Length: 108
Image (cartoon, rainbow, N blue to C red; front, top):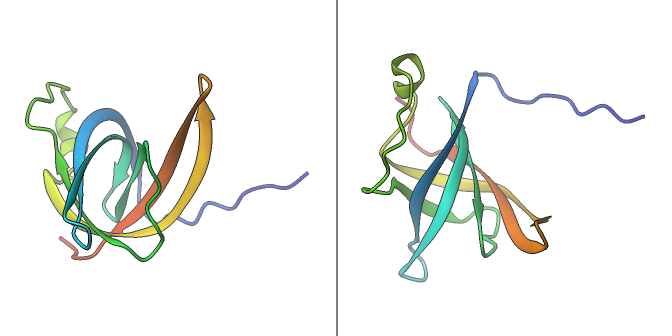
């Protein structure tokens, strides 16, 4: 049995928040879902892949009404510049999605 090793150095906070990310190289805006975040980065799902190493601007959807507990909100950035570290295809309810892990380019 293979056991995955946790590589993260900071706590992760679960959520389900609509976001928009911008592919600066292509000048495109794409809707996605933010599923968790930490002081160091984000995990999101999208309908199309993004290559590792790509620089992306991630912004919370202005229409989001999800309430995030205050203790966790301090780590959530409303807009951030990230580098995609990995992207993998997955299937949810028969639909293809892409899971994307990205790291903040600039610290707090």
